[in-house]
Image (cartoon, rainbow, N blue to C red; front, side, top):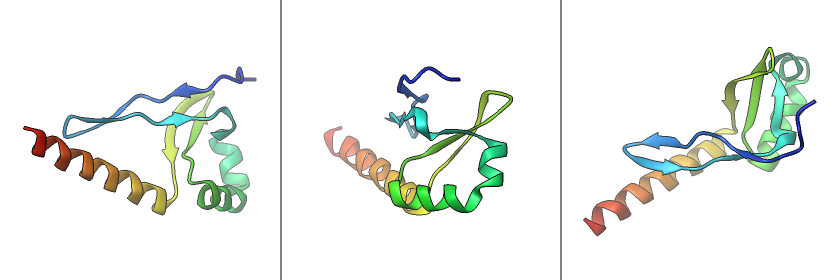
Length: 88
């Protein structure tokens, strides 16, 4: 069982813009569990907008998020990029 401590996933780098993503402990699932209960997990992804880390053999393998949440992330990165260019 994982310790109930929040941790920050590695920062995403997109054109030198860093976006820190915080992964909640309850959003870490095994790939097997995700596959067996995909409908429930997809519903939760849409409702919460939180990314889910899927593990294989106890190690993080992939991050899944709803399309809407992903679009918001891309929009935030694009706005940050524009703001950074304005400051230069």
